[in-house]
Length: 236
Image (tube, rainbow, N blue to C red; front, top):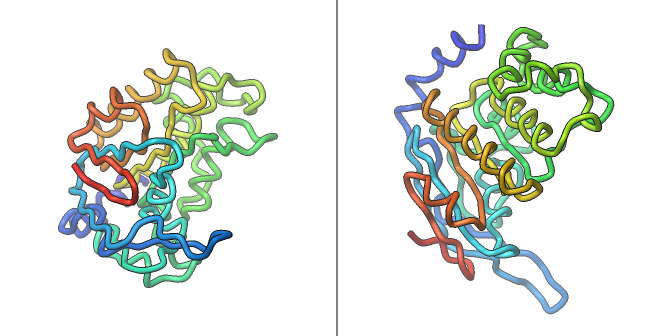
């Protein structure tokens, strides 16, 4: 069922850029007055493209990724995903627009304790309106090498295994766009390399657009396009 639903929406969505930021700005109020994190930022990402946003810790790249995913609202400008203007929607509307279309992998995993790996992935299906498809969830975990950990709760999994559950959860709805925010930040080098390999394998196998925020140049170099985010300016 997931494959048919994803295929049905694919022609319309691939007619547009996978992601666009138009004149995007983000400001916040600090102790010394208003601070501009960035202004007039523009970005266009093609369907199936792998893109890295490279920058130092605290540069604002994670905030930018959250805006691009519709998790936050910008101060100014627009974010378009597959032809839909996310910034024109309220919070519920943005959540509905993301459902099944955007997968997000966080540095901190954000798995629900007390739920098994299988239940964490099934929950993503339920929230996206696909229903709790146990077979699809199990297949996603099998794909990330956790077929033998289906019924393990997060506290019984290593950091690398938890991140792979998070990737399975993000990918189980077969989204057209997969975003990852420092996905190796809490992992050792060897485990982090395995997680990065998995993200790029999913990008290739499913032609999923991949947007990856990282501070690691060796990870960024594997992407089709690399942007550097410095002092509020995004450049290639």
